[in-house]
Length: 164
Image (cartoon, rainbow, N blue to C red):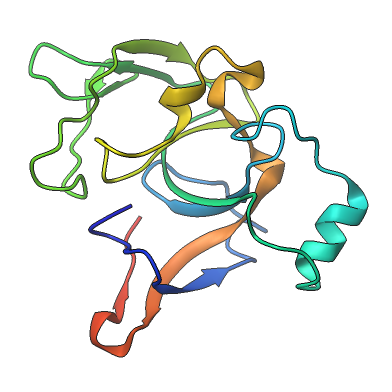
C-alpha cells in the first residue's frame, strides 16, 4: 500500500464506517482474508471472537484499496493503459510513482456481496489479481471487512488522513 501506507504504520480504523452506508470504490479497508486471500482457511466464529479480543494473531488481516464493488466489471487495461471500471477509465493518483496500474491483464465481473481490491504499490502487491484462479477468485466477501482505514497515526511524523 506504499506510499499511502508504509510497513509499520499505526492505523486508525473506523469499524462503524459501513454500519449505515456501503463500501465505496477507492476506500482503504482492513479485512479478514480467510476464505478469499487465504482461500483454504475458513473463518470460524471462535477465530473471529479471538481476533476481536486480541487473543489471536493478525496473520489473516489485510489492508487494500477497493477498486470494484458488487455489480462492477473491472478490467485491465484500457487503450490508455488505465484500469477500466464499468467501461470508464479509472483515475488512480494513489498508485505508487513508477508503477503501472497492472502487469496482469484481467476482465472480471464482481458478484454482489463481494469486492475487488488492489494495493497501491501495484508491482509488489498480492491482491485480488493474484487469486483469480483460486476459490472466490480473489474477491473479498463484504462481511469479512473489519473497517475503513481513516488515518495513519504512527509514527508521528507520518500522521495523515487516508482518503478513499
